[in-house]
Image 1 (cartoon, helix red, strand yellow):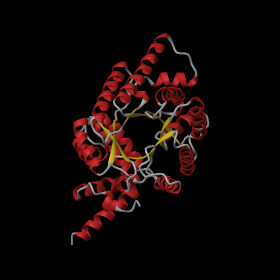
Image 2: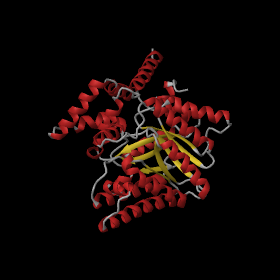
Image 3: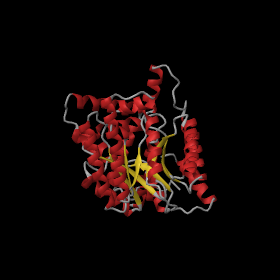
Image 4: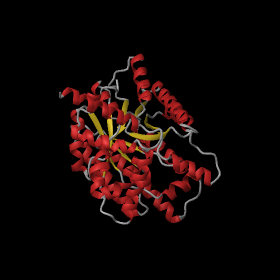
Length: 388
């Protein structure tokens, strides 16, 4: 199903395909990619004029634009191919009230922008963009907040409620990202209360589970039991995880057992077990499966076929990052499954940390970069033969 490159790259011109090949050729080499990201970091630090190069390569490949208007072309182009979009303002979390309010304003704008376009049924935000990480850490540890911290935390909860209420009133579903394990406990608690409040009849609010964590499968089991006991529905954005290096480094530094699975195979098993559990309870859960793993997606499709579940079942969605996994997204959409692109946008200067992280992740040994390059080469060859 995922081998049809004609469908996968139907929205790319040959010139765009060649540029993608150049990018993935670099990213598929660990040495070249690490050297490239090091040069970019150094060049930015000493203020060399490299933004133009970054804009036409990494930025154009992994981001839709610097603002909503620039992103609209990409959203509509994807929509023409029956692919939905989730726009994500991909800037790093700030540490001051001013930055939290700015992000709240930007998220409200994104909701307003999304509600006018049928191709954008979801929005997403990161908890640490609404409040200090130190607050999430203290509350996750069970520490008491000081007087001014209590006021700050009330503001954090108010921002959560404001953006969620605005999304629901706009008929937009809203996903909340996961953070590092040491700040996640209070986020879990907050999300449970928000899902209980807003997901009585329909799923509007989603929490995110990172399945590279050893404890998340048990947490999911408890969450499902709680939802049945207290009569609310669950929205689950299911991912493998984004903070592997930070999690393991902190565990080593503070001398505690890492909460992360010891290898990718165990993470995959965890992810697939979570999928299986969710599918068994699909009438009560909306699954947003964020993955580039073809086997995980094939498992879901096989289960749907076996259980005579329609391809466009409203509770099952598949998502891949913009600039990656086109062979998955477009082939799923062609077969009439709910296929989504997770699309970062924002000012180039502010999304640079995201772009560097994306480059570093794609250059890791177990990344999908070689697979991406293989499929791009296959399509270039197909077009070459066809044009003869």
